[in-house]
Image (cartoon, rainbow, N blue to C red; front, side):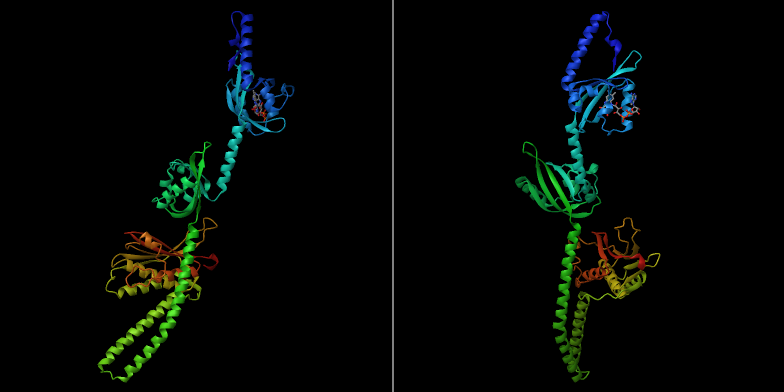
Length: 502
Ligand code: FAD
């Protein structure tokens, strides 16, 4: 703020001349580098410099006698303008950035300082506006904002890492993929934030990026909530204007689901192969087996009961029967069975599986101390299912859990209904959960337990879990498994519910 009396001095005439010269000098200096306008207390323009005319594209004649509304672009709010006026009318300096419209309609931005000149009562009698053209910077900022908004539209996780792996940019897609917000991720070391253990291919990728400027590959990463994901990652080395590498642009696509489907397809292919093999086996083995059975029967009939060879022949007959049973079981597991669905009470189906499992433990000397606890739901759940097949699948999981429990502990069987839809995409489903407190399954084995013939159980066929999965999939469901080494495992059968059917 500049007071009028500051211009007064003992020799009024001389002092006035000196001050006027001083002011003219200051104005000249300002005119060279800045956009200047002077208004009266109502904002009516009574001085503009050449820079003002140049940037606003109005002539001096067009501007003098007008107020600044002539260049108002309609961008700023009433509150913003009110604050400007309240500040300067109160005798204080106002600083801010204004977006103006030139005569030809083009937009320009000015960094503005408005200084009020006040009289002896402290009331402004004129205002001087000093501005700098900041159009280029504002347009660049707008462009950056526009591009950032575009990057945020991408479903891919886009991030920028410094050469020391510090995250400097994190788009909306990255927030969705990893669960970390931009505020949480920026400034963190990408190696620590996105990986449990840094895979060996990471260093290999760094080398390739340094040599060729690019890298592309798959990486196993981890989200904020500890979920393991697989991403297809594309890295590009970004150079500064001196051509020196200074940042890495990373675009990651979450392909976890794709990978899962791929593995499932492989399993399905393996299963159908197993089915064909089993059918072939049955054909090849059953006929000669029937022949042996027939011959042994004839030999047995020809001997009287006390013949010492009869005993041996009966032994052969028993073994042949056992082979026959094994071949049948193999066929039963491997051959896709046609679904015979009808509305059935899930509680009853699971209860039956639990009873059969309990009966089996009862018959075993070992494992007698394992308790199978069933937690039925409060309300009965009626689902269109093939009750026999679902019972088979649940029984399979319970028997596995009992075997894993190693003669102690307990197996819990629960039926749970998923909470009501939170989003339209969420399927309403019912879950049958079988959990044990056994030794758990190692991460390596977890990825293989659904492979046909994979087993860690003595005497196991490795066909149980693939069959469970096949049955559940035939019901449009899925099988999940969670396991912690030393704490136990939980297998879950998820079956979709169509409300019209429940
Ligand atoms: P207006 O109706 O003009 O004003 C909005 C509110 O501001 C009013 O409701 C009132 O609360 C307050 N106000 C308006 N006039 C006065 C006054 N004389 N005394 C006290 N309060 C008042 N505007 C720009 O858009 N770009 C510029 O570069 C620019 N530079 C300026 C430089 C100076 C030195 C001054 C004094 C003003 C400047 N203005 C500038 C403000 C301009 O005069 C207009 O107020 C503004 O453009 C808004 O116009 P409007 O018609 O939307 O609202």
